[in-house]
Image (tube, rainbow, N blue to C red):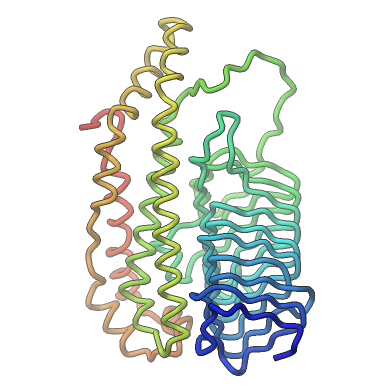
Amino acid sequence: MDNDVFISPEVDLKRISPTAVFYPGCRIYGEKTSIGPDCILGAEAPLTLNNCQLGRTVKLKGGWCSGSVFFNGTSLGSGAHVREGTIMEENSAGAHTVGLKQTVLFPFVQLGSLVNFCDVLMAGGTGSKNHSEVGSSYIHFNFTPHQDKATASLVGDVPRGVLLDQQPVFLGGQGGLAGPARIAYGTVIPAGTVCRKDVLEENTLYVPEPLAPQRAPYNHGVYKDIRRLIYNNLTYIGNMYALMAWYQGVRMLFVRDDFDRAVITGALKNLDLILGERLNRLEQLAGKMNYSIEKLKDSGAEFAALVEQQQAFSGAWSRLRIKIETLETPAAGPVLLREIEAAGKDTYIAAITNLTADARADAAGWLQPIVDQVTGLWSFSNNE
Protein backbone atom coordinates (compact mmCIF):
# COMPACT_ATOMS: atom_id res chain seq x y z
CA MET A 1 0.00 0.00 0.00
CA ASP A 2 1.28 3.47 -0.84
CA ASN A 3 2.24 5.84 1.98
CA ASP A 4 -0.39 8.28 0.71
CA VAL A 5 -3.11 5.80 1.71
CA PHE A 6 -4.49 6.37 5.22
CA ILE A 7 -6.00 3.45 7.12
CA SER A 8 -7.49 4.37 10.48
CA PRO A 9 -6.36 2.32 13.52
CA GLU A 10 -9.80 0.79 14.13
CA VAL A 11 -9.82 -0.88 10.69
CA ASP A 12 -9.20 -4.64 10.91
CA LEU A 13 -6.50 -5.34 8.33
CA LYS A 14 -7.59 -8.98 8.15
CA ARG A 15 -10.80 -7.69 6.56
CA ILE A 16 -8.86 -6.17 3.64
CA SER A 17 -7.86 -8.55 0.85
CA PRO A 18 -4.16 -8.45 -0.07
CA THR A 19 -5.18 -8.25 -3.74
CA ALA A 20 -7.16 -5.01 -3.26
CA VAL A 21 -5.62 -1.99 -4.99
CA PHE A 22 -5.51 1.45 -3.32
CA TYR A 23 -4.52 4.55 -5.27
CA PRO A 24 -2.99 7.53 -3.44
CA GLY A 25 -5.57 9.63 -1.63
CA CYS A 26 -7.63 6.76 -0.20
CA ARG A 27 -8.77 7.10 3.42
CA ILE A 28 -10.23 4.01 5.06
CA TYR A 29 -12.19 4.16 8.34
CA GLY A 30 -14.46 1.93 10.40
CA GLU A 31 -14.12 -1.33 12.30
CA LYS A 32 -16.83 -2.89 10.10
CA THR A 33 -15.10 -2.06 6.84
CA SER A 34 -14.44 -5.09 4.64
CA ILE A 35 -12.74 -4.93 1.23
CA GLY A 36 -12.77 -8.07 -0.88
CA PRO A 37 -10.36 -9.45 -3.48
CA ASP A 38 -9.38 -7.43 -6.56
CA CYS A 39 -11.23 -4.27 -5.58
CA ILE A 40 -9.77 -1.08 -7.08
CA LEU A 41 -10.22 2.10 -5.04
CA GLY A 42 -9.51 5.74 -5.87
CA ALA A 43 -8.37 5.31 -9.48
CA GLU A 44 -9.76 8.70 -10.58
CA ALA A 45 -9.83 10.84 -7.43
CA PRO A 46 -9.39 10.64 -3.64
CA LEU A 47 -11.77 8.21 -1.94
CA THR A 48 -13.02 8.09 1.65
CA LEU A 49 -14.51 4.80 2.78
CA ASN A 50 -16.19 4.42 6.18
CA ASN A 51 -17.75 1.20 7.49
CA CYS A 52 -18.55 -0.14 4.03
CA GLN A 53 -18.53 -3.75 2.88
CA LEU A 54 -17.17 -4.51 -0.59
CA GLY A 55 -17.35 -7.84 -2.38
CA ARG A 56 -15.02 -8.85 -5.20
CA THR A 57 -13.82 -6.65 -8.10
CA VAL A 58 -15.61 -3.54 -6.83
CA LYS A 59 -14.41 -0.28 -8.40
CA LEU A 60 -15.00 2.93 -6.46
CA LYS A 61 -13.12 5.56 -8.43
CA GLY A 62 -13.39 8.52 -6.05
CA GLY A 63 -15.68 10.26 -3.58
CA TRP A 64 -17.17 9.48 -0.18
CA CYS A 65 -18.96 6.26 0.84
CA SER A 66 -20.26 5.47 4.31
CA GLY A 67 -22.35 2.60 5.70
CA SER A 68 -22.93 1.13 2.25
CA VAL A 69 -22.68 -2.32 0.69
CA PHE A 70 -21.24 -3.13 -2.73
CA PHE A 71 -21.70 -6.63 -4.14
CA ASN A 72 -19.31 -8.19 -6.66
CA GLY A 73 -18.52 -6.18 -9.76
CA THR A 74 -20.23 -2.92 -8.76
CA SER A 75 -18.66 0.38 -9.74
CA LEU A 76 -19.02 4.13 -9.26
CA GLY A 77 -17.17 6.98 -10.97
CA SER A 78 -15.42 9.82 -9.19
CA GLY A 79 -17.42 12.28 -7.11
CA ALA A 80 -19.65 9.58 -5.64
CA HIS A 81 -21.53 10.51 -2.46
CA VAL A 82 -22.99 7.32 -1.02
CA ARG A 83 -24.67 7.39 2.36
CA GLU A 84 -25.88 4.84 4.89
CA GLY A 85 -28.36 2.18 3.87
CA THR A 86 -27.29 1.89 0.25
CA ILE A 87 -26.99 -1.57 -1.34
CA MET A 88 -25.59 -2.02 -4.84
CA GLU A 89 -25.97 -5.57 -6.12
CA GLU A 90 -23.85 -7.38 -8.69
CA ASN A 91 -22.63 -5.36 -11.69
CA SER A 92 -24.79 -2.34 -10.91
CA ALA A 93 -22.97 0.89 -11.61
CA GLY A 94 -22.99 4.65 -11.67
CA ALA A 95 -20.93 7.16 -13.65
CA HIS A 96 -19.41 10.25 -12.06
CA THR A 97 -21.02 12.39 -9.34
CA VAL A 98 -23.78 10.05 -8.20
CA GLY A 99 -25.57 10.62 -4.88
CA LEU A 100 -27.23 7.66 -3.13
CA LYS A 101 -28.85 7.15 0.27
CA GLN A 102 -30.85 4.09 1.35
CA THR A 103 -30.88 3.14 -2.32
CA VAL A 104 -31.14 -0.50 -3.42
CA LEU A 105 -29.96 -1.27 -6.95
CA PHE A 106 -30.52 -4.78 -8.25
CA PRO A 107 -28.00 -6.47 -10.55
CA PHE A 108 -27.08 -4.67 -13.78
CA VAL A 109 -28.90 -1.39 -13.01
CA GLN A 110 -26.96 1.53 -14.49
CA LEU A 111 -26.99 5.16 -13.36
CA GLY A 112 -25.63 7.98 -15.53
CA SER A 113 -23.69 11.02 -14.33
CA LEU A 114 -24.94 13.78 -12.02
CA VAL A 115 -27.67 11.58 -10.58
CA ASN A 116 -29.36 12.03 -7.19
CA PHE A 117 -31.22 8.80 -6.54
CA CYS A 118 -31.99 8.48 -2.82
CA ASP A 119 -34.72 6.35 -1.18
CA VAL A 120 -35.38 4.12 -4.20
CA LEU A 121 -35.36 0.42 -4.97
CA MET A 122 -34.73 -0.26 -8.66
CA ALA A 123 -34.79 -3.61 -10.42
CA GLY A 124 -35.27 -4.86 -13.97
CA GLY A 125 -33.17 -6.32 -16.73
CA THR A 126 -31.60 -9.67 -17.44
CA GLY A 127 -27.92 -8.87 -17.95
CA SER A 128 -25.25 -6.33 -18.76
CA LYS A 129 -26.67 -5.80 -22.26
CA ASN A 130 -30.30 -5.62 -21.13
CA HIS A 131 -30.42 -3.51 -17.98
CA SER A 132 -32.51 -0.85 -16.29
CA GLU A 133 -31.14 2.63 -16.88
CA VAL A 134 -31.31 6.02 -15.19
CA GLY A 135 -30.12 8.82 -17.48
CA SER A 136 -27.70 11.55 -16.54
CA SER A 137 -28.91 14.56 -14.54
CA TYR A 138 -31.79 12.59 -13.05
CA ILE A 139 -33.27 13.10 -9.58
CA HIS A 140 -35.63 11.25 -7.33
CA PHE A 141 -37.59 13.94 -5.48
CA ASN A 142 -37.94 12.70 -1.90
CA PHE A 143 -38.96 15.78 0.11
CA THR A 144 -42.38 17.44 -0.06
CA PRO A 145 -43.67 21.00 0.53
CA HIS A 146 -45.30 19.57 3.68
CA GLN A 147 -41.76 18.74 4.81
CA ASP A 148 -42.24 15.00 5.04
CA LYS A 149 -40.17 12.22 3.49
CA ALA A 150 -42.69 9.39 3.24
CA THR A 151 -41.55 9.30 -0.35
CA ALA A 152 -39.61 6.10 -1.14
CA SER A 153 -40.22 4.83 -4.69
CA LEU A 154 -40.34 1.32 -6.09
CA VAL A 155 -39.06 0.83 -9.64
CA GLY A 156 -39.87 -2.79 -10.37
CA ASP A 157 -40.33 -5.01 -7.33
CA VAL A 158 -38.59 -7.64 -5.21
CA PRO A 159 -40.63 -10.83 -5.80
CA ARG A 160 -39.91 -10.84 -9.53
CA GLY A 161 -36.89 -8.57 -9.65
CA VAL A 162 -34.68 -10.99 -7.71
CA LEU A 163 -35.22 -13.58 -10.46
CA LEU A 164 -33.44 -11.40 -13.06
CA ASP A 165 -35.97 -12.14 -15.79
CA GLN A 166 -37.99 -8.94 -16.08
CA GLN A 167 -37.98 -6.22 -18.72
CA PRO A 168 -35.73 -3.24 -17.94
CA VAL A 169 -36.99 0.20 -16.95
CA PHE A 170 -35.71 3.34 -18.70
CA LEU A 171 -35.81 6.69 -16.91
CA GLY A 172 -34.61 9.32 -19.37
CA GLY A 173 -31.95 11.85 -18.48
CA GLN A 174 -32.52 15.41 -17.29
CA GLY A 175 -35.73 14.17 -15.69
CA GLY A 176 -37.14 13.24 -12.35
CA LEU A 177 -39.43 10.97 -10.38
CA ALA A 178 -41.53 12.39 -7.53
CA GLY A 179 -41.89 9.87 -4.73
CA PRO A 180 -43.56 7.85 -3.49
CA ALA A 181 -44.08 6.22 -6.89
CA ARG A 182 -44.42 2.72 -8.27
CA ILE A 183 -43.06 2.05 -11.75
CA ALA A 184 -43.76 -1.22 -13.58
CA TYR A 185 -41.26 -3.30 -15.49
CA GLY A 186 -40.74 -2.32 -19.11
CA THR A 187 -41.69 1.31 -18.48
CA VAL A 188 -40.00 3.95 -20.66
CA ILE A 189 -40.17 7.57 -19.47
CA PRO A 190 -38.56 9.97 -21.99
CA ALA A 191 -35.72 12.34 -21.20
CA GLY A 192 -36.54 15.80 -19.92
CA THR A 193 -39.76 14.89 -18.10
CA VAL A 194 -40.83 14.59 -14.46
CA CYS A 195 -43.03 11.64 -13.51
CA ARG A 196 -45.45 12.42 -10.68
CA LYS A 197 -47.72 9.38 -11.00
CA ASP A 198 -47.56 5.61 -10.73
CA VAL A 199 -47.04 3.66 -13.95
CA LEU A 200 -48.54 0.25 -13.17
CA GLU A 201 -49.06 -1.24 -16.65
CA GLU A 202 -45.95 -3.03 -17.84
CA ASN A 203 -44.17 -2.27 -21.11
CA THR A 204 -45.58 1.24 -21.29
CA LEU A 205 -44.19 4.41 -22.83
CA TYR A 206 -45.32 7.07 -20.40
CA VAL A 207 -44.93 10.74 -21.31
CA PRO A 208 -45.89 12.89 -18.32
CA GLU A 209 -48.01 15.93 -19.06
CA PRO A 210 -46.22 19.22 -18.38
CA LEU A 211 -47.63 21.24 -15.52
CA ALA A 212 -49.87 24.10 -16.58
CA PRO A 213 -48.95 27.54 -15.25
CA GLN A 214 -51.11 28.50 -12.32
CA ARG A 215 -51.25 30.63 -9.21
CA ALA A 216 -53.40 29.58 -6.27
CA PRO A 217 -53.46 29.74 -2.47
CA TYR A 218 -51.38 27.03 -0.82
CA ASN A 219 -52.13 25.68 2.63
CA HIS A 220 -48.91 24.43 4.17
CA GLY A 221 -49.36 21.21 6.09
CA VAL A 222 -52.83 20.45 4.71
CA TYR A 223 -52.96 17.05 3.02
CA LYS A 224 -55.52 15.92 0.49
CA ASP A 225 -56.20 12.31 -0.51
CA ILE A 226 -53.55 10.21 1.27
CA ARG A 227 -54.66 6.75 0.12
CA ARG A 228 -51.99 6.40 -2.59
CA LEU A 229 -49.38 7.83 -0.24
CA ILE A 230 -50.06 5.23 2.43
CA TYR A 231 -50.46 2.32 0.03
CA ASN A 232 -47.20 3.04 -1.79
CA ASN A 233 -45.33 3.28 1.50
CA LEU A 234 -46.74 -0.02 2.73
CA THR A 235 -45.89 -1.64 -0.60
CA TYR A 236 -42.31 -0.41 -0.29
CA ILE A 237 -42.04 -1.74 3.26
CA GLY A 238 -43.46 -5.09 2.16
CA ASN A 239 -40.84 -5.31 -0.56
CA MET A 240 -38.09 -4.61 1.97
CA TYR A 241 -39.33 -7.51 4.08
CA ALA A 242 -39.36 -9.71 0.98
CA LEU A 243 -35.79 -8.70 0.13
CA MET A 244 -34.68 -9.45 3.68
CA ALA A 245 -36.25 -12.91 3.41
CA TRP A 246 -34.43 -13.45 0.08
CA TYR A 247 -31.08 -12.48 1.59
CA GLN A 248 -31.60 -14.72 4.61
CA GLY A 249 -33.06 -17.68 2.72
CA VAL A 250 -31.16 -17.58 -0.58
CA ARG A 251 -28.23 -15.16 -0.58
CA MET A 252 -26.79 -16.74 2.57
CA LEU A 253 -26.34 -20.00 0.65
CA PHE A 254 -23.73 -18.33 -1.58
CA VAL A 255 -21.39 -17.27 1.24
CA ARG A 256 -17.89 -18.64 0.53
CA ASP A 257 -15.68 -16.73 2.94
CA ASP A 258 -15.52 -13.86 5.40
CA PHE A 259 -15.68 -11.25 2.63
CA ASP A 260 -18.97 -12.69 1.34
CA ARG A 261 -20.28 -12.94 4.88
CA ALA A 262 -19.44 -9.30 5.58
CA VAL A 263 -21.37 -8.19 2.49
CA ILE A 264 -24.50 -10.17 3.40
CA THR A 265 -24.33 -9.08 7.04
CA GLY A 266 -23.95 -5.45 5.96
CA ALA A 267 -26.83 -5.72 3.50
CA LEU A 268 -29.17 -7.15 6.15
CA LYS A 269 -28.15 -4.36 8.52
CA ASN A 270 -28.95 -1.80 5.85
CA LEU A 271 -32.35 -3.36 5.19
CA ASP A 272 -33.07 -3.02 8.91
CA LEU A 273 -32.02 0.63 8.64
CA ILE A 274 -34.31 1.19 5.64
CA LEU A 275 -37.27 -0.44 7.38
CA GLY A 276 -36.74 1.68 10.47
CA GLU A 277 -36.50 4.83 8.37
CA ARG A 278 -39.69 4.05 6.44
CA LEU A 279 -41.61 3.35 9.64
CA ASN A 280 -40.32 6.52 11.28
CA ARG A 281 -41.29 8.59 8.25
CA LEU A 282 -44.83 7.17 8.36
CA GLU A 283 -44.93 7.91 12.09
CA GLN A 284 -43.98 11.51 11.40
CA LEU A 285 -46.66 11.65 8.72
CA ALA A 286 -49.28 10.35 11.14
CA GLY A 287 -48.23 13.06 13.58
CA LYS A 288 -48.95 15.72 10.96
CA MET A 289 -52.55 14.60 10.46
CA ASN A 290 -54.10 16.47 13.40
CA TYR A 291 -53.09 19.84 11.99
CA SER A 292 -54.31 18.89 8.53
CA ILE A 293 -57.61 17.59 9.91
CA GLU A 294 -58.34 20.77 11.83
CA LYS A 295 -57.60 22.94 8.81
CA LEU A 296 -59.81 20.78 6.58
CA LYS A 297 -62.66 21.01 9.09
CA ASP A 298 -62.34 24.78 9.03
CA SER A 299 -62.52 24.73 5.24
CA GLY A 300 -66.03 23.30 5.03
CA ALA A 301 -68.17 20.17 4.94
CA GLU A 302 -67.06 19.25 1.40
CA PHE A 303 -63.78 18.01 2.91
CA ALA A 304 -65.48 15.55 5.28
CA ALA A 305 -64.23 12.51 3.32
CA LEU A 306 -60.63 13.69 3.56
CA VAL A 307 -61.05 14.35 7.28
CA GLU A 308 -62.38 10.83 7.81
CA GLN A 309 -59.53 9.36 5.78
CA GLN A 310 -56.83 11.18 7.71
CA GLN A 311 -58.45 10.43 11.06
CA ALA A 312 -58.48 6.74 10.13
CA PHE A 313 -54.76 6.74 9.37
CA SER A 314 -53.82 8.79 12.41
CA GLY A 315 -55.89 6.61 14.74
CA ALA A 316 -54.70 3.32 13.30
CA TRP A 317 -51.00 4.05 12.92
CA SER A 318 -49.75 2.86 16.33
CA ARG A 319 -51.46 -0.51 15.94
CA LEU A 320 -50.35 -0.76 12.34
CA ARG A 321 -46.70 -0.14 13.22
CA ILE A 322 -46.75 -2.92 15.81
CA LYS A 323 -48.21 -5.31 13.25
CA ILE A 324 -45.52 -4.44 10.74
CA GLU A 325 -42.67 -4.71 13.23
CA THR A 326 -43.85 -8.14 14.43
CA LEU A 327 -44.39 -9.52 10.92
CA GLU A 328 -43.23 -13.11 10.49
CA THR A 329 -41.97 -14.27 7.11
CA PRO A 330 -42.05 -17.88 5.90
CA ALA A 331 -39.09 -19.92 4.72
CA ALA A 332 -38.23 -20.42 1.05
CA GLY A 333 -39.94 -23.24 -0.82
CA PRO A 334 -38.31 -26.65 -1.39
CA VAL A 335 -38.10 -26.50 -5.18
CA LEU A 336 -36.24 -23.18 -5.11
CA LEU A 337 -33.90 -24.28 -2.33
CA ARG A 338 -33.10 -27.58 -4.01
CA GLU A 339 -31.99 -25.83 -7.20
CA ILE A 340 -30.07 -23.14 -5.34
CA GLU A 341 -28.19 -25.65 -3.21
CA ALA A 342 -27.23 -27.63 -6.31
CA ALA A 343 -25.82 -24.59 -8.11
CA GLY A 344 -22.63 -24.02 -6.13
CA LYS A 345 -21.64 -21.08 -3.97
CA ASP A 346 -19.64 -19.07 -6.51
CA THR A 347 -22.31 -18.72 -9.19
CA TYR A 348 -25.08 -16.47 -7.82
CA ILE A 349 -26.02 -14.73 -11.08
CA ALA A 350 -25.76 -17.93 -13.11
CA ALA A 351 -27.72 -19.86 -10.49
CA ILE A 352 -30.60 -17.39 -10.55
CA THR A 353 -30.56 -17.05 -14.33
CA ASN A 354 -30.75 -20.83 -14.74
CA LEU A 355 -33.64 -21.46 -12.36
CA THR A 356 -36.41 -23.58 -13.83
CA ALA A 357 -39.96 -22.33 -14.24
CA ASP A 358 -40.99 -24.39 -11.21
CA ALA A 359 -38.32 -22.80 -9.03
CA ARG A 360 -39.30 -19.32 -10.21
CA ALA A 361 -42.94 -20.01 -9.39
CA ASP A 362 -41.80 -21.27 -5.99
CA ALA A 363 -39.87 -18.04 -5.38
CA ALA A 364 -42.74 -15.78 -6.45
CA GLY A 365 -45.16 -17.82 -4.35
CA TRP A 366 -42.88 -17.29 -1.37
CA LEU A 367 -42.02 -13.59 -1.73
CA GLN A 368 -45.20 -11.99 -3.08
CA PRO A 369 -47.32 -13.06 -0.07
CA ILE A 370 -44.78 -11.33 2.18
CA VAL A 371 -45.47 -8.06 0.34
CA ASP A 372 -49.20 -8.75 0.46
CA GLN A 373 -49.06 -9.34 4.21
CA VAL A 374 -47.95 -5.77 4.72
CA THR A 375 -50.26 -4.09 2.22
CA GLY A 376 -53.15 -6.15 3.57
CA LEU A 377 -52.62 -5.19 7.20
CA TRP A 378 -54.81 -2.13 7.01
CA SER A 379 -57.11 -0.23 4.72
CA PHE A 380 -59.23 2.91 5.02
CA SER A 381 -62.39 0.85 5.03
CA ASN A 382 -61.17 -1.50 7.77
CA ASN A 383 -58.62 -0.01 10.12
CA GLU A 384 -59.02 -2.18 13.19
